[in-house]
Image 1 (cartoon, helix red, strand yellow):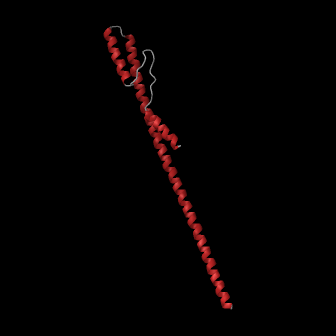
Image 2: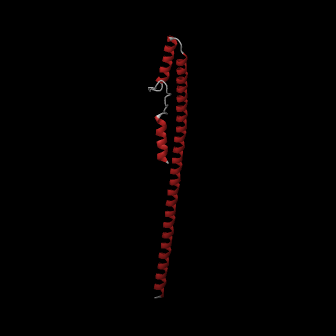
Image 3: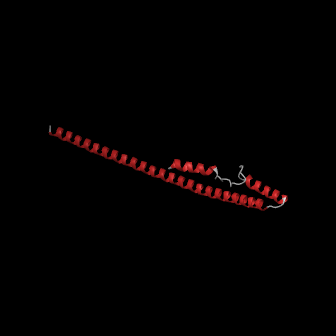
Length: 136
């Protein structure tokens, strides 16, 4: 009888120890999965921040190029219009008119004689801004 109690007690101890080991392994595995998910989340954040930085650099570069283009175009238009105002002979008027048309040709718009055109930036700027806003 004593040996049966000792055997059952030993079996119970082994089962209890096995259950404790199983529980500890289960908790450890859950912690490892949580750690991996945390690492993946940080990795996703790093990738998103890198994409955002790349888009911001593209936006700045595109804006710089658009501003340079618009500044150059507007400068040529202003100079051509000033030459047209100062023209005195028909030949000078014709030459100034050609310069104005060339300057307006870069804009692809119809400008009225007394108003400066409203220069628009490239559609790429808007697209990049929308992509950045979506990413935010």
